Image 1 (cartoon, rainbow, N blue to C red):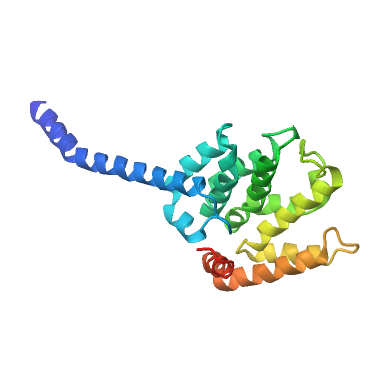
Image 2 (cartoon, one colour):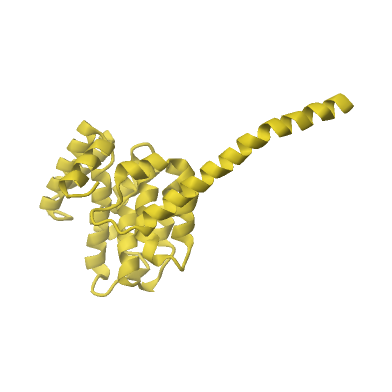
Length: 227
């Protein structure tokens, strides 16, 4: 028994530096994640830098999105969650859009809601649930039960905007089914959404499938003057 206890004590001593290092690395990721969402980015969050933080940053982004006192950071947090494309985060973004708010929302919250919907796209490449959700919500009438509104954006005008966010999300999904959904929607007559918007989404999706989402976003943000 004594030798067993001695072995366990030795193991604990040996593990201690590793645990300290892990805690330091976690703290570093939290600090970088907070810095990222606290910065105002003219052309959106830097895609590559956000991806490089990895899943360890998700708890920080989720905490920011849940915090009622951090509304100024919600848009960046929602974008970051989408960029990381962890399929376990789908319900976080979907619930933020559908369940969190009712009645009139302010402009800051409205922007975060749009970005939460649009940034479901990357995870839809590997999540059948997310892809099915986007397929359903790219049609304006799917938004009839939405409980919130923003100024003149209410009723059918708001449904149209939210369906466009779903289309934008599909355009960023590196999935053959996403392409098919966009093309099927393009063929609906009379059109449910603006055909020019759909044409742009289809063209974007082709680039994403050719280049990969990370490289597409790198080129896009470079052209816009971002990182």
